Image 1 (cartoon, rainbow, N blue to C red):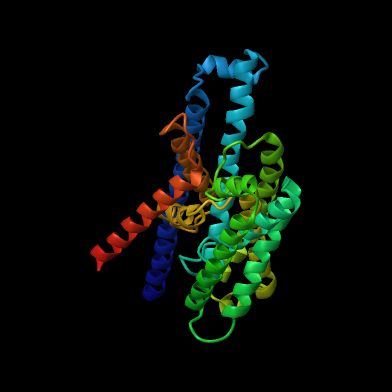
Image 2 (image 1 turned 180 degrees about the vertical axis):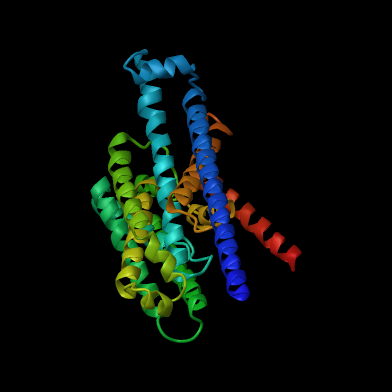
Length: 350
């Protein structure tokens, strides 16, 4: 009896400790979510109020309610606000896409810009721009086809053989390099105006976006992120290995196809409008896991991507004003600095 009661108390104590740990982690996740939202709101307010055409908070608020002079309405509602909304939604879409591919490949480098999917989507969008003159529908369609083609090539060439997940990354880097070469050839052979526009757009830029471009793409991104959130439970089970996931009732083939389709859709629609914005898909999931390490929810990863792209675009437009740099140039600098820091930290721990 004494042994049974001791074991019972031990089980109760362990369950209580797990419950306490769970509550702490949930509180930490809530704090992280609140902090990310505050950073987004503060950065958005700064982007709305500052710049060559400065405006006071009261002026911006009155503009939202239909007041203000025509110049203020144009700057705030037509130029700045679509860009801010695009940075928030596009950044979230890229971050969630990176999280999906890292979960699918079970590799921290398995982001779409590393395994070649972003380059493939860029190629498809370029072909649409060069052949039919662009347009939102044609560019998105071309980007989706290019991303799917890249995924098909990488999947077929990486299947079989030795190396497993490392083979997938290596093959993806090679396919991405091929698509990058094709992109350079398309730009060099296009007419001058198209080549100049494609070159600027290819750096990853939110310059000149309108509500007609931002709204449909943002709606698609939100819908796809909802699909990712709905399948997040199966994704976590899949990360435990195919055999364990199958034993727990997960349909492996269907789940992987869903992850692949949603991930490609997210990166393709964003690339079609804003160009290939590098490193958001790679870095955002890592940062989200560091802030909320226990089963990082999709929403934390998405908000982290929104913060990274919104801050990067604000820096790009304000640091060298009135010159507006592509946001992709800043994300490359931030991503490169993060990778250098990460490599240095791993070297010190060894």
